[in-house]
Length: 346
Image (tube, rainbow, N blue to C red):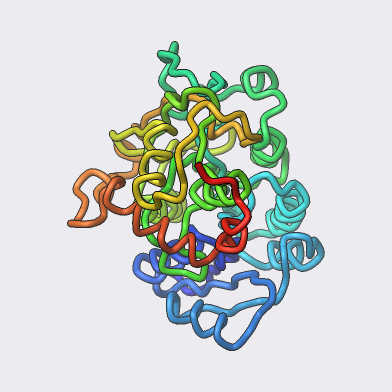
């Protein structure tokens, strides 16, 4: 593979970002990576470089629009596994890649990670049988403007699709992972939904669902998510007939699903101080109260990906074995202990 190509990574210090760095180092060792990271310290840089030896770290945050745009102008591939809804960084990336695309070089590649909540059905925590199971080939302009109207990820995804349609074109792919689990190798080791649940539990003194918590979502191990990023990148770099733009959505889930009630029960079992209070109506994002039905057919059939770490898990790596360990880590990372001293725990 040509060493003239390069990758710019957003989200390197996040939960998924660390695993993506490992995957890129294994699958594309000759491709240098430049990664945006805020609040740099020698220990943080050392940690990041331990995940990818051919890494250069750049000081900045998602709000440093000029930095992101300049980096995108001079790179072949941008991978964004940071905050999927951050419109400013998405627009800056696309502007930079559009400038890149005006040169005689091959069209640049943008891989963006959103989530299956984009294709969710809000149900206030109830289980609703699906009318349709998404595979990623159904997205159209009409669907984007009606079905997902008002969704957190809708505007960024729409802008990304448009960047593929308008000249000069950017090759865009959007990954939609489900409930990601597994202990991350990077700086952030615990998945966002679990951190959110633990944070809310610290405020309420108990863990709770939205409604009965019977809504379900597909589970996927963090290693499988990172491998999906590499599979899409590999397909794009090798010139395969890979889906792009409005045909470039890729659900990333395993054959297993979980309910939010099950997640709450695991949290309660792992930490008795979190007495369950099912039916709590605390404010949560759509992912916590909706049903999300999809399959990863495109990744499997078109790109040879598999959810091997989710479906053929090593001892201790299954969803129900991993979550208690992640909860323990999450408790250490979040400032929960003081909150419990004054909580009305039942």
